[in-house]
Image (cartoon, rainbow over all chains, first blue to last red; front, side, top):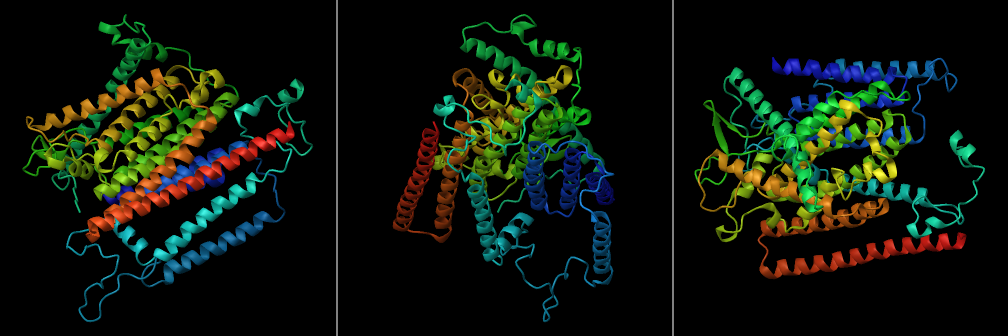
Length: 222
Length: 410
């Protein structure tokens, strides 16, 4: 009973958030609705006793990814409400409708056709004993004690999927270093944004043509 | 593996709900009163340190000063700037306040953990056995990390929603600072989790309550994890709170008031409430992670649930005092120093220390001999010295490069 109530509330939160992301005119409001969706999904995770996933969902997605979205939205200055009548790319909307419809159809097909549920096979059984086969996902540890989902995830990540885990880690590190290298390339004579304080008293560099215009106050001041 | 689930649940539903509500209400009231006293304590202490008298009019020793300030703020005019995004502007203070409250739910506030009969801090409220903490979720300390990442939104949206420049600058500073220091915070917590073998806060207290070396030195994580994670956590925690010396977020000489420049009246008060509440919860989390929480030093002391609460408050006060002491003593960091400290000092140190602890833990599991452990330690020290040298070399090269480029230009 409690489970049904919690599920309904959390699912409604997630769905309303998802709608809000699409419908909001202001990108910052969209990002806020996205947080609502992520929170709703986190509650659903808790309901499935996937506590670790719920925490990671909030820490990584709500706490880092959406913050990055907001950073980009605020710093690029696209945080103004948009006019929906204008179509930025020609033919974008009919195409989006077709692709969206196709994705929905695929999803529904998988849900209806799949035998063991849409998320994969159910528990495999040992043919001899008829008991569930021993896998790393067993909820009973070697000493007969029940183990938490956190321990199970840890065990799987560092045994069966150790290689994939390490490759993912390396990939992320490379991506970070690559991003830093790309953004930090400084050609001589260009101004850096985080100078040593000793160099603050240097004469300002004349503005380049390719620099973005600042607001009118700055212009009139110059 | 310790698996402590709150013995409360599974009984009659009504009793469970009522007791949980009672605990939540007590924690909520406690935090509000604690904030009131904390603001008074900070003002009084800092005026002592600066040779002033401080608040002394409202109530005995000025103890009701905060109450008076709160009432005054409540009746002030509530301004919403013309350029503000009204919805976000009004939402932001609550987004700052709610995580501060929620974190306190996972902090064990009392219970006798030192008793030898294995009751492990279980107390009885109206005939129901339970823990003296609002909740003991299996995700435990991860909940703290999740909430501290949500707390960034309050500040960030306050800055953006104000539709003004100084708040936006303050908000961008704040979010960059809080995200940077969250990494060091997480790595310090990882060392504790490695030691405890559980994320549950209650298990952490049980683990630390066991008698330490010779039964005299307490088995607290500050000793067991070798002090380094504690100091990393303390520094990163201060930065996460935006308290001096890391208060660049509201650096009044540079940013007017930082992210809350445009706020007035009760919304302004809510930000301050959240800030002081965060100070108290962060101190409580530090007590929990490193100083044994409600578990006292394993000495001969009277028994009872209140002894845990007594120890908890004693340790909490020590941290609150230190925070005020920081504010009175240390000058504010410059922004580049702040980022350097986070990324180039705290994160490498805590990462290296975590690897060292993990190695020693592995040796413990594999029954390494004395010589093997010694060889491992020497190998670690050499590796870390090499890596640290490389890091320092890289930092100095980059700095020299920048200085040279600047010199070329000038």
